[in-house]
Every structure is written in structure tokens, then in C-alpha cells.
Length: 270
Length: 64
Picture 1 (cartoon, chains in turn cyan, green):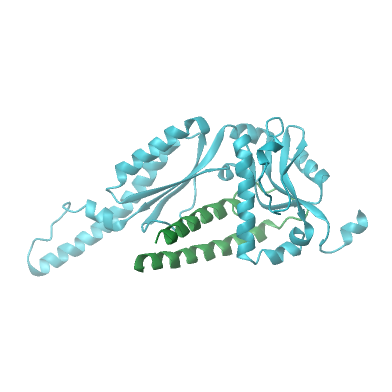
Picture 2: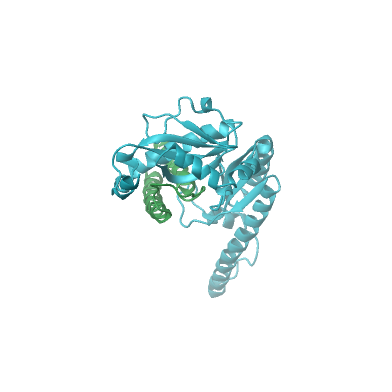
């Protein structure tokens, strides 16, 4: 062991890639039948230690070992493939029980090292308990400024006066509409987040991304994740649909994604 | 047109996925793990790549 530790970059043999943790008593390996791991030739195993099991699969160190993986990471295609595999395994886990998702790239030398890791992190079990029976849903809100302006037509000073005065009024109106739009974004973000939080177990506001790749043209004003009871899912979607129909005329488009494993509801120190 | 729309939809889902798998989730010490800094770095560059590719897709969508 001591001589092996001094050997530089590991390029042969097998390591274990860990996707997340599940409650040992509830999870079953059958949930992963037909699911391929980040190495497509290997299936998924559960490595049990006390109340918790790691969801893991063997990976060749020639591809995932120190040094080797850094080269692979430069290929966006390789990375996309592995990120999708990571998600597919966690989604399979989520269908069977609660799951604590790990961030991409947790690779261990062997099963005993994984067991040690599970023993060292006592918070995994209570976190799984906290996440039991819930999934994460993602919500984004966008404001389409053209539609917002159209909805505000007829309000405020009208540009019916002649000549230079009409020009000044138009300018004034432009500025007022831009300010209205910003104020509306703030108010609508708060209202939407409160309405959705009321039907969720937990909620997290996430950073706004500008500009964002989206099916909508508008500016993002809300980015949030909600931990929702699987039994309360319909209620959440109803509330979401109500917001959509209430604010469509204001120029708002909402985007709902998921169910996701609860990536946004596990803290780093767990 | 439909192909392009579904491609855009796929790219959006991929961004959501990358935001979670590479940027969230528990980080515990692994033996041969990438360092958190490495994962952060690949997250930032992949996200920039995806967002710009999506912008091009949408421009094509608007004019095509």
C-alpha cells in the first residue's frame, strides 16, 4: 500500500464512481436494472454501510484516474455523455427512494474507501430522512418587454399633444415603462416565489442568469428550486399554472423543469 | 423547424442538467476525485459553450 501511494498517476485498474447516497433499508439494486453507469460497460451497485448505501459503479482508472480524467474533461462530448449518465443513475435511484446527489466526479479507490466515507459523514442519514418522499422542481420566470409594454398601453400620459411636446411625452413614457418593467419584475418574482413556496416543503432562490439560453426572448427575473412532496406535486403544478395564466398578459413566461434529484437541497458539509 | 425547436429544448434541458450535476450536489473527499476547483472550472467553461451555442441556434430559428 505504501509503495502504491508513491506511484504517480494511476492509469490501470478499477476505481469506483459514486453518484449519491440512498437509505440502505429502502433502496434495491433492481431499481437500476438496465441503467448504464458513467462507464457504459458497467451496471450500478449499492455499497452498504450501516443505514446508508452508496450508489456506485466500477470505472476504469485508465479513463477516470488522476491525470487521465483531466484529459477527458477537455472534450465537451465526453463530459455531456458522463453528466447524462450521472443524472440517469440518480433518476433511477429517485424512483425507488430518497437520494442525496453527489456532485460529478467523486471517485474512490475501492469499496472499503467508500464504506469509510459513509461512516465519516453521519449527516447523510438525517439528510436522507429530510428528503424522503420529495423531488426538486425548477422554475424560471422571464419578462417579454414587448408584451409587457402592450399590456400597459393606455396607461399614463398619452402622446396626443402636437409637435415637440408629443416627442417629450413619448420620451417620458418610454422611461416610465422601463421603470415599470423593472418594478414589475421585482414584485412578480416575490409574488411567484411566495406562491410556490407555500406549496413546497423547502425553497431556494438561485442566481439569475443573463443572458440565458431559453425558449423565451424575455429577461430572466426568477430562478428558483422547490423541494416538493411527491404527493403534493399536482397542487404545485396547479399553482404554477395559475401564475402562468395570471401573468401571461403582463408578458411573463414561466418555465418548469423536473422532477430532479434534490441537487439544490443538499449542503456541501453533508 | 420542429427539429430546431426540439434541439433548442434539448440544449435548455442540458443547461439545467449541467447547472445541477457540475455545480450542485454534495462534495465529499474522494480518493482520486477531481478537485472542486477543477469541477468549477469545467462547469464555467461548459456552461459558456452551451449558452453561446444556444444563442446561435435561436438566431437561426428567428431568421429561418
